[in-house]
Image (tube, rainbow, N blue to C red; front, side, top):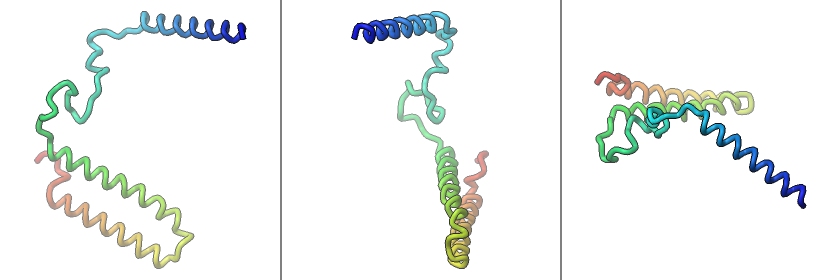
Length: 117
């Protein structure tokens, strides 16, 4: 019991010494305040939350999420290629890819992919 308490005290003492040395030797300064603050979508977290939001940025984010989910859906399709009937697999894959291409064409046609609008 005494040995456990002694070891705990030593561990706490050593960890406090290491934290104190880290604080004294670190190179943080007031200039690093901006680097340590959170950064969300180009907004300053200390400013008003009612600032206008770029609709184009939102559309690009949605396109990214759609194609990110698409990749997550294509991987299992590739893995099940040998386990499922070839005709059903081909029809499902073809339908999925055609739907994605139609969506991409629509986005391209609406100039959503052009950043300089």
